[in-house]
Image (cartoon, rainbow, N blue to C red):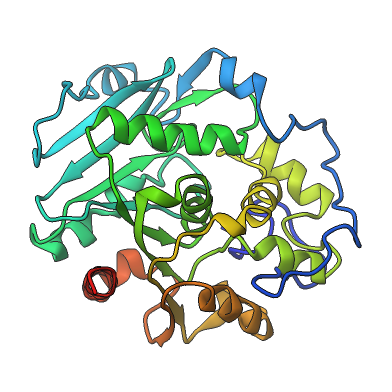
Length: 323
């Protein structure tokens, strides 16, 4: 996987940066377009109406695919459930376990191949929570055990899948959002789409909505570089144009809720570089109520390597939200 603030598949030439709370005139520098045609911002007919393709996980093993469980609906409050849910004609794999409140929604990092399964990545955090929190996770369309859908995902597709999954599971929020790596951008998109459903946010050395602004400062040499956009939108497993999603969320930053956010920044910035851009990330954090920037000794993928650290900071977000 590439750096969180760069094209996830394409290789960027030059540094990538994103503007955050400092604003700036977004009309000063036009955003490059991908080399292949992209769908409009408000909708994605190809991905929204396209017929599901083959599931991404173990596609060559029909017996394994046939054995995937389906979640029986409706879900009893506090029940542990795991399996497939039909969301507008395509199957999404999801899991919820634990009985604490508020419910925590985990957003995993970028999936470079089908072996990246968001539900499995959340397992350590779920164990660390020891039933103190209700942890819910899902595998984005085209990834893990979820179904593949034709076309590039739009921001509406990304948010719509989250809405569909957790509505079907009976989880109505407000939620604490947990974003790891690229999953921070997914969490950011949800916060501006549904600020009333967010109680707090914990980000793990992650991408942020202001990555669009940072990339603009660097002349669109990262996720918004045309070849990177093309690779992310058309060649990656996720089929998700990161530049488009971060632009969509950044331009809606005025809708961010007044809730606590903690950002855990790894002392090893190799997956977050250039470290000089942390000043912009800190401005993003400062917009929240309160916003807390913390340097930690854990590696970038701390969601899987240090779940105890994650659980401790989830509790801190909840404590801040309850003040």
